[in-house]
Amino acid sequence: MPRNEKATGDANSPDSLVFREVNEEHWPDLDRLFESRGGPKNCWCMLWRSNSEERRAKDKSVLKAALRDRVFRGTSIGILAYMNDQPVAWCSVAPKETYRRLGEPVDPPGGTWSIACFYVTNSLRHTGMTARLITAAIETAQRHGAATVEAYPVDPDSPSYRFMGLVETFADAGFTEVARIGTRRHVMRLTLPNSSATTRQPKVSARRNVIAAAPMRLTSSPSVVTDKGTAPRSR
Image 1 (spheres, rainbow, N blue to C red):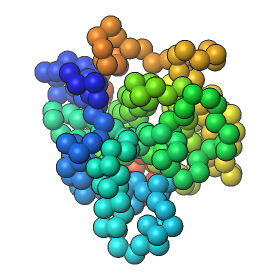
Image 2 (image 1 turned 135 degrees about the vertical axis):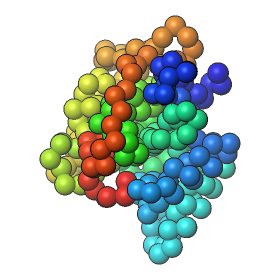
Image 3 (image 1 turned 180 degrees about the horizontal axis):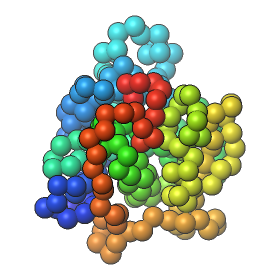
Image 4 (image 1 turned 60 degrees about the vertical axis):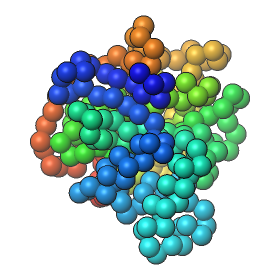
């Protein structure tokens, strides 16, 4: 299996997952997921990436082109989850410096990667997909040499920014709160191995790049749930 892929579950099971970093080869899969019904095609996950010119653009195709340009220039932007070879979920995880300002202005030494967004298709919400995306995102950042992974989740009753995840989900993954941004977002960090902090790490099997995870429970519920949240609706 290529170094930028991670598998979970039985390969022959309908609920098996493969996680792949988005690059030129996998851009068409991201395009298809984002353009699908309910996908984040209104923002193209550029909220925290866009420069001033891109933010002023009225045409959403400008945001799509900007994200594609980053991918084709070799910039890390995130990972896709695949089920039966179909893209079903997205997590924005990338070097913190590739985003606009997120979290604390002073980062711990060694390089920080940020988890800034999730999108999960309706049929896989309420299945623990966000937790599995977090685990795969941590492994991706670690493989690229990051010392710290940072996230900006909200409380369950937050009316906005729920696409950035929930505090409880990150706490369960071993993240600890270090600051607040405004009234809603928490800054949470996980220090990766070979650093001085002692935090709980995701379980990684003996097979290289294979992250252990429990099977998922599937649901067809169309409601907006905690795997993605309620604002903005399309994310």
